[in-house]
Amino acid sequence: MKSTILTGDRPTGKLHLGHYVGSLAARVKFQHDHRQFVMLADTQALTDNAENPEKVRENILEVALDYLAVGIDPNVTTIFIQSLVQAIPELTMYFLNLVTWNRLKHNPTVKLEIQQKGFGEEVPAGFMVYPVNQAADITIFKANLVPVGEDQLPVIEQAVELVRKFNRTYKTEILVEPKAYIPPIARLPGVDGKAKMSKSLGNAIYLSDSVDEVSKKVKSMYTDPGHLRVEDPGKVEGNPVFTYLDAFAHDKAKVAELKEHYQRGGLGDSVVKKYLLENLLAFLEPIRKRREELAKDPKHVMEILHRGTEVARQVADHTLKEVRGAMGINYFKS
Image 1 (cartoon, helix red, strand yellow):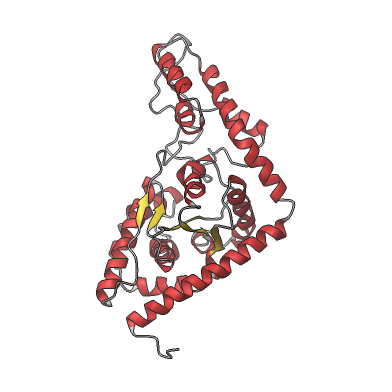
Image 2 (cartoon, rainbow, N blue to C red):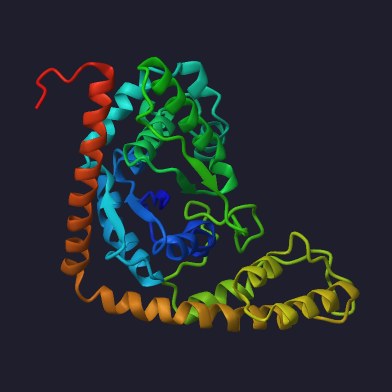
């Protein structure tokens, strides 16, 4: 049987190269051999953007354009808007009754994101429980494979806990335990050398960036701070330029040669960056052109989302009907 995949993104901005290596590439790869649902997670985006819903609304189209531009095919992948699938919040509520507040507070992913966002003691309750909402997203579609970065593994672990607790409590096997799929390169560092490329940190190369924007960002990219002169030996490990080459350069032998030369000395950062820029522009050009063409007809893109959301609703409603039956709250059986 085909695996079922659930994945998605918070529509708070255009997608970048980190999104591509972290999950978009896997979605394009898997979509013809798996049943795939891709979610525009607007409900989750509102957990820390409640006072700016227009930001979320505007980025629904932007993220959808990125999806289609990289090759996610709506004929084989169901692309949908989270908030319009009403079965998800209902299952979230049932799950909330099966998890303790203490467990939520100690989720490593949530703790890290609270720190990064600087909430302090003013953490929105919706933000604290979003891993439960994510568990509902996954299980309402009975997804058994979820492409994620390593930082999201605790969320998948919590989803597994909730599935087991639900099935055990209600003596059923309706819900499916998901497994994480971590791509070969699960995370890209930011161009500033920080551990993660992020919209909020302003250190990203976007899929829609112009040639000039990409060039400017690559030229300013952090490298080995100890590589002060061309003749100095340089470090490859932890050097973002080489991490990006590993992800996007097709000529692996050339990359290996550059690494060896850089490590022994005699190779300047500008030469390596030039080679990286050539590869990034070759990768991004067809995506950017496809995106520009799609952006000319936003109504068509929104219609794709409308159709996908209707499909997602039908699947989710069927699972919810089973959930209610297992819990014994299907009061008016039909």
